[in-house]
Length: 311
View 1: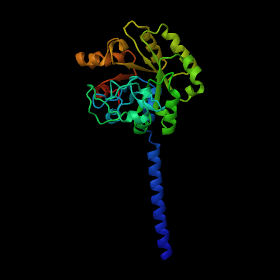
View 2: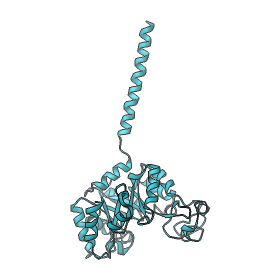
View 3: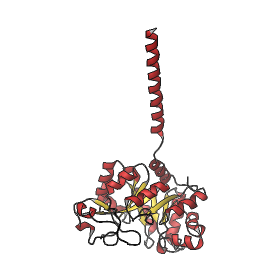
View 4: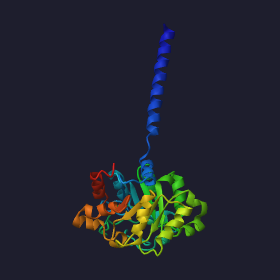
């Protein structure tokens, strides 16, 4: 009788173990948020538009701050665009300008500060008012905060700090959730970074005043085959709009920037406020945008969800 009882107890324990293991396997099989977003980047369609927030949600917290990025995560934004600069002692920190003057209570070039010195500064709010208790974050801090939660679009790295940024991503195991971008030609990037370009997600920026956008894109297709392009156009007759149609036909993601007129022929966030979202964001989507960068992420999310263009 005692042996039977012990056998039953062991059977119960093993059954519980396998049940827990099966449950854990199911949890592990669920793709992370960033894996899903990357899949959408690689397979764009007319039924989904990615929302990209410019420098975090800077109306909610200081631009390029941890709180501004955290807000994007909480809203359900797909990609947060940030700017990084190198300090004197070679740490990457979040800062759009070459100087700290506009966004902090300090003054001087980012490159003249050590990390310890820049951490003593405090960020200003969107109106430039001092008094925030928030520090300038490092890229490493940002990648730990965003890990598996939101894609990160890195600006200000092209031709300068790609290697340094990649090192941070490797350290934080977030290489697959960061999008590098830049204005340089494919040849420039390959000549400077070589095989490193095969290890990162790179999105070329096609400027609105580029003399030969078709060749610029073609050179990238032949060498690095990007999964996305940031397409700028200052008029409705821009050659870049024709290139957008080609990219749509090739199922390559097109990111439009709705921040100011020359980036999107006037179909901006401001036009959304004055004439409604159909007149601005709707126009961009109808003309090929698979992703839109905005300074009003909450409003854009609400719009694309209403249009059933976002989960």
